[in-house]
Length: 205
Image (tube, rainbow, N blue to C red):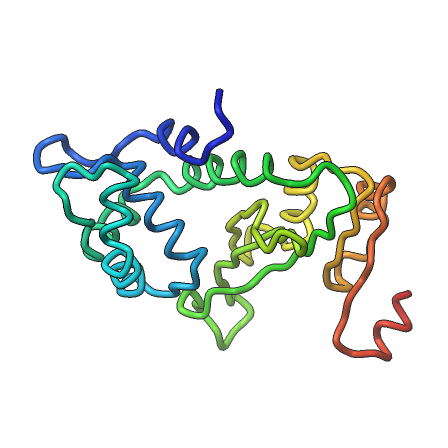
């Protein structure tokens, strides 16, 4: 099997009805991914990216309708898609792009502000996107989504590191990951703990 992202995206089942479907699912997903990796942070931004690169996308992706999907089409696809399958496909591709050794991998989780519920009591919950980022290559190599009430960032990072099975790399992450279990998982790697508060950093190290 080829290592291309297209090959992995083509494995994802299309949730749309055949009637009215214009572009292939993998074509739409690829445009969305390229838009996000180019810095587009909104659905409208995806549409602007597609229009800006319309000619190249039509030619290189062989779009049948000779036009690019609208941002509303991309929105509908992303609402219906099996995210777990999409995330798995992207992770498989991204992990094959990692240089064999010596890469600095940064791990971090970011909460999505529009997902917060019960913000004023102990039942507070929110969704976080956890990712591993290759600093040399400037690309995300693994991602996962978690809910604050169900799973911690610590366990999610551990799961992603287990999937990568990397050795002799430098890992940077928040001080909360400086635990015995995490250190065991990174026994063959050099772990650098980063924290903005210098005094807290000294105490940890």
